[in-house]
Length: 114
Length: 115
Image 1 (cartoon, chains in turn green, orange):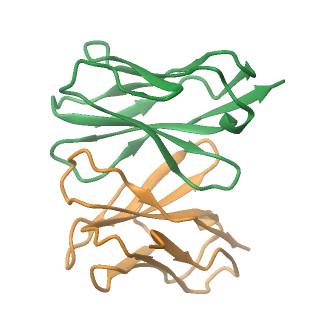
Image 2 (cartoon, each protein chain N blue to C red; image 1 turned 30 degrees about the vertical axis):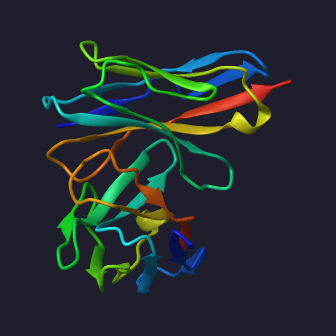
């Protein structure tokens, strides 16, 4: 079975500081893709960043970057210079090369304080 | 270009009533999905359609049926609603029926309460 584990139900960060959200996953396949989705109070699911497993270089999107450790099956999200608008639920998800559906973690609620 | 649209946004049902959640996408995507989101459970896949004319069960299909009406539309039906089906329902679509690296685009969600 393919699983995604987010061990931090809640995290808090001060504005302008850096925070890292953890995610581990389990799959026996070698071809897969990893994602972080953000869900603000509006409920809309927004893609933050994606990582292809075959790429060694960690993905970055502006203030968002990942630390992808394939051997450890770890995919953490780093948010730099945190802003109030970053407050949301963050979901880690992955999809394998043979499947056509995402597997989601249970989410981490991020609070941003002044 | 509206992306993925869902109707209704909110619905309250009594136990035993039936209803259909509608989903449409205008991005010419091949694959469409229905998820439910419950507190502390993340998103769980109910059904998906890898391409027009096909549907498959996901993780939690019991109590639901789906119809891929055409390439654009994918509906979810609750034949006899139960309180356990109280949840937020999301429809999503993606370009390819294979994993690829294609992003899943989500609709705004439907909050369903069954009393």
